[in-house]
Length: 481
Image (cartoon, rainbow, N blue to C red; front, side):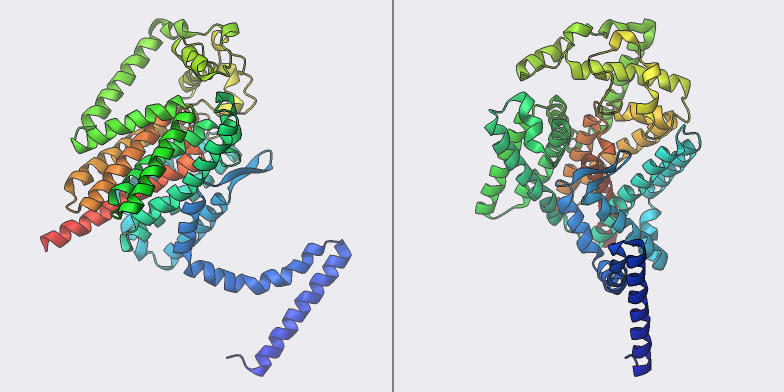
């Protein structure tokens, strides 16, 4: 309890601060100075509440992840609101908690995933030293920090102590279902036209690619909810939601998402049959041989599009026909940037050009035969292949580090699926592996790891893998004892 003398001193200090702020507001004609006393008064209780409710903020972030929308404060500074500020806050809380009680997190940081991510960050810092624009590279690293730390390590810390994967899945799927329903209704008002899909998803998603990617990646979560729901009525509602999601995926008109669904089905078979190693190795060999054949004698030039015939098709059937005939403008522009990307890698194969530097640097490396109507790139988008983007911006070592890490995560989910005794954790391992495989597929024609939705989901899946590893150790030690 405060004594009367202490109370008098506090009142005197508070009155003095308020008087100074009033004086400043009058002198500089800025009423915001009057907010300072109220900020000072609320800082301590707000800080105490946030510190005690870190887990609630984490659940809140999961709920707003599908709902977040991009907001640009300046032409060069933008955040995804409200998700990204929550991630920044969670990162600060995690760092503070680690400094105060490092023992709680040491076992998580000492895992193979923790060490792999440490190598990943070290190479990012090395690449930043050689970046053509150090400020852009620094912003990239900061964003990686506030995505990876809370979504990987806070996820693991929370679920190792109180596993609640069903709550996690529901908090992601319920808001996504809301977006799906409103998108179908709004899209239906336009007669489900291909050109109208973008209007139906604003402001939650920038385009149909991001929307369909998030949708297809959450279908395994919906399937797990259905699998573990025992109540007949609830199971019926979940089934209706899954059917609605599949219908929305069809009307999203995204070839990449449809392909990801097929890849997810292959992953389901591969993980259950313990064949993912052979599947990944075969896919990698096919990719390397295809790349070598295209590069040899400049065979890739045979795929150069006819400039005047490569246009945007408003009808989806015409869009598909153009895709088959290599006259679709989106894929033609991908080829244009991929060629530029490979030429950039040839110039700086080790350190790359620096994170966030593809757009300002790639135009001199393009070649005329692949130019299209949108090659001026008004959206400032990148190379549309995350693996190529890594090699261009951070060098081939970054591609090797991330690519091997991605394969490790997929193979680890397979291993845990076959080692867990509890069917609940076996199915979580299976579902997580399928989602990671879908994300890997989507990023072959996009760079969605750098977006808040798919990027957030990927690092969340990494945190789930880390959690499952700890739970498997616990189960095995329990059986042994």
